[in-house]
Amino acid sequence: MIAPDQVTVDWLRGRRHAPQGEAFERAATDWLSLASDPGAVFDKEVRLDGDAIRPMATWGTTPDAGVAIGAAPPEPRSENDRKALAYMGFEAGRATTDYPVDVVFIGSCTNGRLPDLRAAAAILKGRRVKPGVRVLVVPGSEAVRRDAEAEGLHTVFTEAGAEWRIPGCSMCLAMNGDMVGPGQLAVSTSNRNFEGRQGPGARTILASPATAAASAVMGVLTDPRVFMSAEETVHA
Image (cartoon, rainbow, N blue to C red):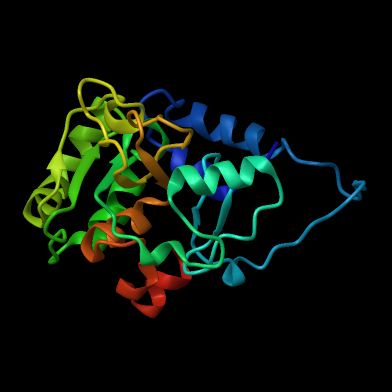
């Protein structure tokens, strides 16, 4: 549970299914009251320094098997770890940024929102996908597709060499013929990377839209901050 704040209110203002006019102001007042009482005590408090968090990507075959981009997969601590490394074709102690990427998938429901597509387009604008890398971009809904096209994001993607698709599950789970080939390595913004998720024998690295776009340009798993200004990096 996360208490609503002004950012929440600003995002909802003017949305299609949100209250309008005076009704919205009354609703916003009610929403902002949904917070812990002053002086509330919690069993445990954890504070994280966002500036210290590096972009992450997975090395295994479950979403929790991840490390900072550029760091090497750890030594296996279980049979599942050993099996995951063997399936992915990775080596403990060797960074996953060393392995050529064949496919990049950006979008579907998990990371196919308008801000996600903007983040990917910011990396790809004025750049080209590395030859030999296939890139699919799938908006998360028809509304997202319309808004993205109104902003010209689809042109950014196609000019960079990516495929702009209609909304659907697509390569997230190897639907409608959109598959990662056996043994191919994909950087994907999906929410699952189980064995065979994107096709029989497909190998999947989960990453953010910005990371996926940067990897498409470089042809290997890439920290997107190499393409960002100092201000963009702070807000990545």
